[in-house]
Image 1: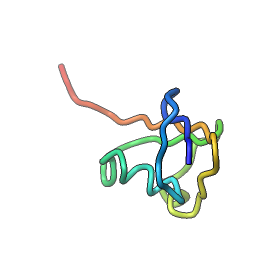
Image 2: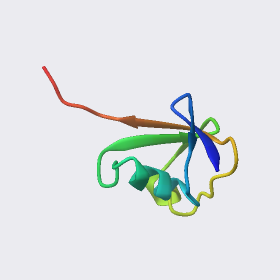
Image 3: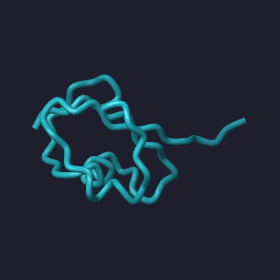
Length: 65
């Protein structure tokens, strides 16, 4: 299925937002997820089904000085 992740079209085999997070190696890291303009809580990731051309923003935090 084609999803738009952070503005880039990506072909992924994913059923849920959690699948997308795992695909990008972000599971267990502090991230914010937005799907089609709505910010999702961590509790919603496993129950939010992805659909063709869904717009997903994954924002993760990096430390630095």
